[in-house]
Amino acid sequence: MIPGKLVLIIGPSGVGKSVILKTLRKKHPELHFPRSATTRARRRNEGADLYNFVTESEFDALQEANTLLEWAVVHGGARYGTLAEEIIPPIEQGTVVVREVDVQGFDSIRNHKYFRGENAPYVLQSIFILPESEEQLIRHITHRAPMAEAELKHRIASMKKELAYAEECDVQIVNREGALKETIAQVERVLVSSF
Image (tube, rainbow, N blue to C red; front, side, top):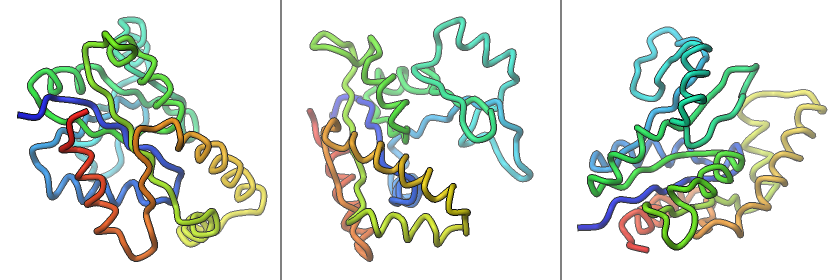
């Protein structure tokens, strides 16, 4: 049996992480995809499969109790966090846990006592999804929704900052245009490998 581990999927906006994760969810029910705790309002027809919706005071309590592996303020002030209870028990049961995080979340989790150092109790792997080129990424971002020049410049600056993290991850996978199946197959190989 493959021992349980946490696999973080990282990459800039527009690189295809959401599609990869959606496919993995459908193909691999044996994997665990933890929910995020969030203070944002539940959207219409939204279930509790992706998010654990909490109030601001409940989120404060989670922070004070040190039950979050990482957290951040995102999109208009809502807080999002990774709950240890959504990650550690499945790992201890021998399950591979797959989590998408931004570079800030990656830094927090890899430096957490659960995963840092030779004597860390749990295994962490990281996969960085790369675009073929920066131009490809810009096309994807602008195709999704029109945006002002200032917003585009901000997005490009963020993208360059995020791409700098690729070498810090265990594995880098290029999501080539029209080759999504191949990209997913490469991710799957990492998920079943032992470290």
